[in-house]
Length: 199
Image 1 (cartoon, rainbow, N blue to C red):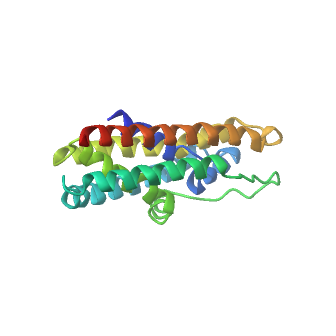
Image 2 (cartoon, rainbow, N blue to C red):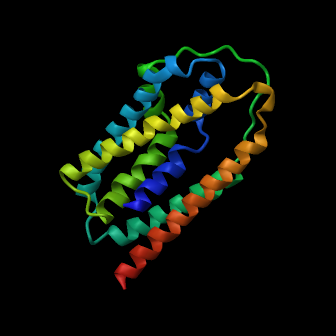
């Protein structure tokens, strides 16, 4: 269960389009007025966890679980490497604040490839591995969705507390490296657990 939340934190809280938009909202004084946007993001991930969780439980069985696990671990490892090598460019020019709400958060996360990256391995790989089935899928989806609401919320909070001239890309580089390491450790831990269980 710990691997699920470690992966979720690593992928949800790393810089991406939704979180960088939230950072911008916070920097432009829209932290509190954008709460519905954060809720939209969480609702989108809840829907994705539910759909992939219930279909994943149906698609993944003991016969193909090891293959799917190894592929999934390889994918998580790849994401960790890619995240660690990402080059973030944050403009230091003032930007007009974007008006967003629940609908924008919901649609942006549903259409965000990072949303699939966050939900698909958890729902189809980690849920079955932890025997999360039936009503447990609903409960875990709800908990992970609450965690997802916090991601853009924290980024907006960080933005609200920053002074624009002190924002340096190097800070985001350290965050990326930390999240990258977290993803790589999760991939290795899952792979070890699955291979050890298969022996």
